[in-house]
Amino acid sequence: MKNLSQIILISLLCLMIFCSLPNAQEKRTKSFRIQQELWKALVVAYNNKDRAAMKVLIEQYPDWSRDYAQRLLTGYLSFSYKDEKEKANRNISIARMIAYYYERIYQTKALARQVRLYKEWSWQEKKEGLEAVMGYPKAVASGNIPLYQEIIERFQKLGDDDSLAITYLTLGKLYHRQGNFLESEKCFEESLNIFTRLNESISTANVKNALALLAYTQKDYAKSEKIYKECIAIYEERGYLLGLGNSYNNMGSIAHSQKKWEKAQEYYKKSYDLYEKIQNQPGSAAVLNNLGVVAFQQKKYDEARLLYQKSLAISRFLADRLSLAQTLQYLGELETQTQTYSEAQKYYSESVKLYQSLSNSRQAALLLERQGDIAKKQKDFARARKLYTSSLDIYNTLKEDNAVKNLEAKITQAQEEKSFDFVTWIVLGVAAVLGLFFFRRKTS
Image (cartoon, rainbow, N blue to C red; front, side):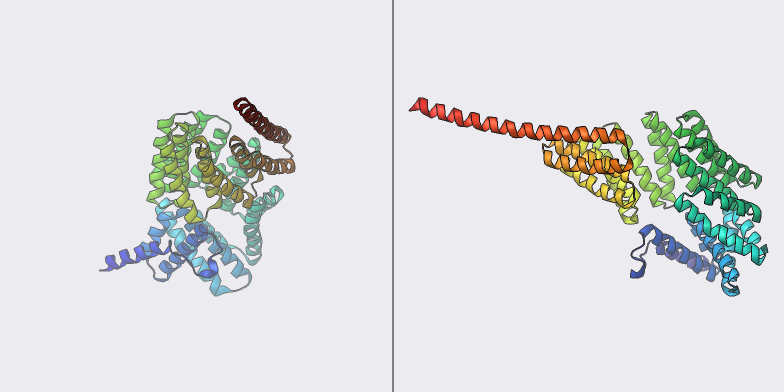
């Protein structure tokens, strides 16, 4: 009877994760609402001392569960600093329980180690720790490298090795995005050394994933594949399905880049099955897009369209603007290729608005230019010029000289073709009138 009640409770808790929140939360994205429902479910499991439910939730949502534990630890430092002992103790107790199951399921002691460390800190150390922890998301959001370095120094001073390693990893990813591969690799190696010393195998594999992606970006596919295989071995040993899904997706990207279509599809499908197993919808949407691109590049347009539409439905449900923008772009490219221009324009228009809302001006400019190309094919030269001009304005702001010259040439050409088209119609009109005149004259 007890087992039956536990099964029912676990089912209800998992169902809660997909329920909507009250109107007060409607402005938040659906993915964040799902996270909040998970956090509520974890608290319910803690209050009911329901170990089975807690275990299931952490197994299904490892990253979100860990993130919640980190939030609880931040709350603990904040409440301790304000001398609100009851709230501080509750936060640390829930974090300790999540840490316990995280260690049991994934053999990682990182959360448990931080729980102990934060408890041992003096009031002054808690204050400094809170400043470092609160500064970290600001550094991530702003990409402020001096702020990153300041936070690294604080974590070193406080002896919070786990936070230090994560900060190095995040800074390495920032350098990677900026194209500073040398500094990126240095940061990854620092993070890897710390996690290796701490015997954190999953975190070590996560850093290796970043190193593999760095090698992939530099087109060193052999090195990248070798590192991903090392990661897969670690994730399989630890039963970390999310990491496995990520790695297989990345392996698919390597095969995809080398035009090994069947191999790419094999890896992507493995990744998709894993994401579906742990109900990781953002991951599923991303892999469906990847499978769609493989089908598109093989000219299997109906199959590609089906995959993109499936991904689009997930992204709309999650209100994931970036994923939505990318999928709409893929659909626009597909409809352009199949010459369904009205559909292509519709998809591109929505994608442009999303990219603009995400401050991704470069991608918005690219799609405006493509819309102009479609309008030109349809001989709507006035609209083509308008779209090209909108794209040109963005490229001018971005100071991309080559793109500006290209757009200026396209605008001139569209104007000339419009003029030519107008003159052609005049000539044809005059010829028709003259032809009619001479025909009537002859017959009379």
